[in-house]
Image (cartoon, rainbow, N blue to C red):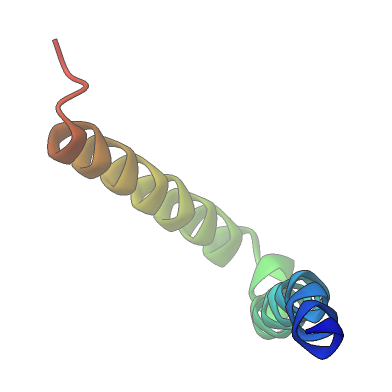
Length: 66
């Protein structure tokens, strides 16, 4: 039973390391795009658009809108 809880305790560390790895990988891929002002503005606009799309979609799905 001790092995079970030891394995379960590893999952938060795995989640954190996996999330950071994905973040650094994506940021390394997008970093060259931030050097050009035109692509930087377009990239920021896309990120904001995705955020609002997810926000409004989840709001409608969960019935939080008044």
